[in-house]
Amino acid sequence: MSGNREAMLEKLSSLAEEQAKAVAGGGERSVARHHTRGKLLPRERIELLVDEGSAFLELSPLAGWGSDFTVGASVVTGIGVVEGVECVVTANDPTVKGGASNPWTVKKIFRAAQIAEENGLPTVSLVESGGADLPTQKEIFIPGGKLFRDLTRASARKQPTVALVFGNSTAGGAYVPGMSDYTVMVKEQAKVFLGGPPLVKMATGEESDDESLGGAEMHARTSGLADYLAEDERDAIRIGRRIVARLGRRPRPAPAAYAEPDADPEELLDLVPADLKEPFDPRDVIARICDGAGPGNAVAFDEFKPLYGTSLVTGWARLHGRPIGILANAQGVLFSQEAQKAAQFVQLANQSDTPLLFLHNTTGYMVGKEYEQGGIIKHGSMMINAISNSSVPHLTVVLGASYGAGNYGMNGRAYDPRFLFTWPSAKSAVMGPAQLAGVLEIVAQQSAESKGEVFDAEGFGAIKEMVQAQVEEQSLPHFLSGMLYDDGVIDPRDTRTVLGICLSVIENQPWTGAAGYGVFRM
Ligand code: COA
Image 1 (cartoon, rainbow, N blue to C red):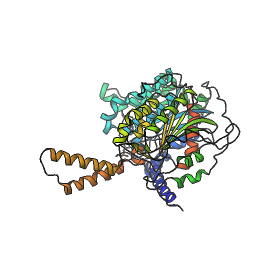
Image 2 (cartoon, helix red, strand yellow; image 1 turned 180 degrees about the vertical axis):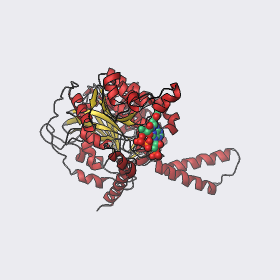
Image 3 (cartoon, rainbow, N blue to C red; image 1 turned 90 degrees about the horizontal axis):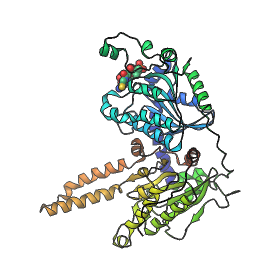
Image 4 (cartoon, protein in one colour; image 1 turned 45 degrees about the horizontal axis):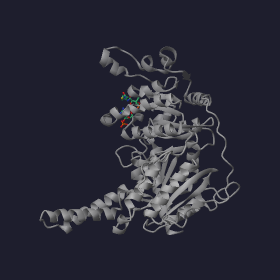
């Protein structure tokens, strides 16, 4: 086994351990209690909701990693196919703190709503939540209002919203069924009220009970908040599928026939060196994720400007029969030529309305007198300008390094790619940990000297080590994914399938290439 493969498999096994924490939800005891109540887990509900045998693309499974909250942030989100329609699905996990929403839950649902908006998808919410996580309410109460605003704005854009209520949906949570186009409630389980019996007693002195305040029967027969009364959870899911089938979404034409990749995707595990200082050829990645040569696709990867700016590979390919333009780092550093080549290539993709795929392995733009005098800032700005104003859909996969402004020029998170996934080998930060600690040391030394003090190099050594270790930890995929800076860390072998789903999803909304850009500095 190659050293690269061994290192990648180790990272994958640590990733699997973290993902298992999200799947375990609130732990054995609360899962068992939930099952004893005759209820299904969020992933079981999703499995019954989506079409049999179809893939569910789970998003942000590591949300909240490294925080005090359970990995996954008490909600499952993703894209699933329901009655042939691609939908954003959100499902509270009631086994984690009663499904209460903590700050990461809210961020994760915001991201799911953004995906629904940008790609024009319906949203199906599988609701069972204790509302706001009360101990952290100060962080979620004010921004959390956007959850409900997003639902009604989606509806106004004709992106339908469906709520299936399986249990508690209290206080602010009551506005999920309240703001959705369709609401289904499960008999003897759904509880939807602005305030439960104790709160009502405190507020008005009125004596009440759960059923009369917010039971499914009451809402179906009396308040009218429930459009459908489901006999049980499976019935609710059946009704939900029926609703989606009638949303009037038109079937899209199937993509062109395509050939499988020219090289074996299994070998993707061998390509990335354990030490990212060693370069690797992104053409080897492209050959394992894109369609092979075949009818209508004479060349698997039609490279553009192959002899110019060779540290960035650009070219045209197809993935699951859909055309894409690819920009991929080769030698790590971006020079002026690479930046200019990128700016031209992005404009060409916009001329032909072709989506773009960015494959990151960059340490950023080249520094040094020669490069500054050669206009590296102007040229990097040109690349960032093209990418920022490009209006074709962008997909990003961080394969290896993603440092400095290279993260921006290659369409990192701040540049709003439709989807951004990370390989377990990725690392992202303002600069490498050793460089960052070294820069800090030089700055501290100069500062001491300017004050006429003696610089304590030995004492600073400990600080330097600590900072380096901290930046190293914060550059890793688990950490960044935990902060929702990507849509998930994926097994390299799944890249083709994941990108194939994304390319299908973006087709739900038409796009045209950019008509104009910011002023290009020549
Ligand atoms: N914030 C923080 N923690 C919450 C919570 C909330 N809103 N709702 C429930 N929890 C916690 C409980 O403290 C308990 O924690 P523990 O396992 O560490 O003891 C865990 O979630 C499970 O709660 P429990 O009441 O045992 O589960 P249940 O399934 O019987 O009931 C609820 C779940 C959600 C119906 C019930 O906990 C409840 O009514 N919560 C408050 C709902 C509310 O009024 N929210 C208003 C917020 S705006």
